[in-house]
Length: 318
Image (cartoon, rainbow, N blue to C red; front, side):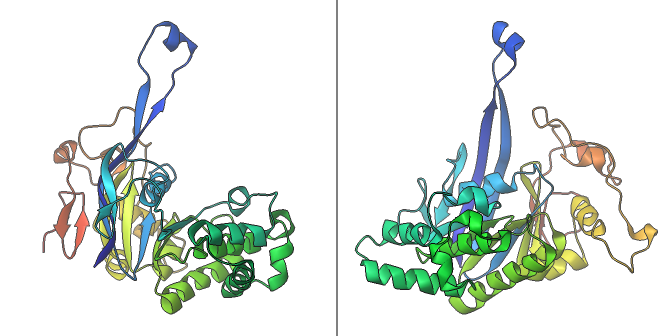
């Protein structure tokens, strides 16, 4: 059962030109960061969204939680179209940089209390204090962290505090935007384990955004691969890593360091991304794809294949 759906979602940003263009009265450029994404999140699953920097992952995350309005399409929570952030707090976001997402002038306890009273204003001060302590304990932080300011915590502790704050409204869905990319490897493992516990013990649905294929492989049930604002492949995690369908997905997986991989097994992705302001009519990846043919210059649609979805005409239909 789908709990969250992106329905033909697009988001454009206006890019202001330089002084000469303003003098010449040229119109501003529009960058479509997300293009016609259809994506559903099933209750209780962890959906991974992966791709290179600039592919639209973070923009899609903000569209899902209502921080950005959709230029086209809409996002539905439990079948109802969202108009901005959910007023009941059923979907919350964990940001990439915990230091910039936490108010440096407030203690961690005050930040968590604010999140509690925002959605449950009748909570008494004593109950709020108990919930703050319970929230810190859930993410593995000692109770005295409530009296500290964000600058006094390590990166891993700040990220745990961010997760604790996101849990205060008692959400059903967490959207985590690169939550471990700025952390050391050992701290990353602890945060990933925390997300696994939240899913297992609390039944929270998670949308986990990352560029790290190894993290995605370990944590997620299904994976959506994005390239230049589009979903190019969607499969269950095991199937995607065992038999990727899109050449871009194959390149991402081949780029993961492995001791037992030979040079022949690598799949090069040469060339540069096309200009996002002037995209080709056909496959966006054709200019970098070693398998490109004349037919790749035609528009590609996301189609059902072998239990998943792929935006490539070469993928076999089974």
